[in-house]
Length: 215
Ligand code: NI
Ligand code: MN
Image (tube, rainbow, N blue to C red; front, side, top):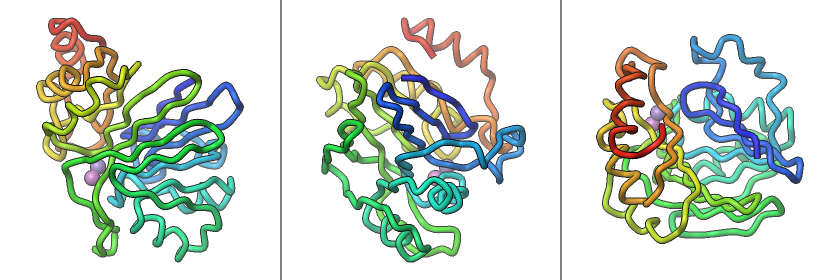
């Protein structure tokens, strides 16, 4: 698999099957992603973690252009259908589903979730994905919480964790999270985009190294 970072919490993953996963599309509203060509981002499946604008900002135009299937909690699924999206798959926390590219389990996140108009976005979520003989965790926006420990026996190859603080975990919490999920290879997200979440990259990487982990 090949992972592409589009800024903030948005990642594209190209799988060996040729399928493309896209997490939390937020490009046009992100000053740091202004060189990303929104119209060229491939997607067969779009997985939004929750309904905040910095996670679904570009979901509808990308879904319409690519005809990708939106995999989301019930409330975001319903919203996507109401926006004219044809392909969507509803899930909820704790559920799993086998797709043609692999398996998705929706897991808990501790955060809030509302659409840009203020309406209820359902519970915020994370995902555990199995594809290309790997298993990884995409945490979404979340606080450090004890239920992450439920993933400790899942043999995660790597994990996407927020590290920007203020709205989510900070670096220190993310290190504790990586202990709880028993995974030492972490891809940081949700940092630098706005003033509230600017971090010192070198200090973050040194803190992970000191804990015997890779950021
Ligand atoms: Ni959020
Ligand atoms: Mn966010």
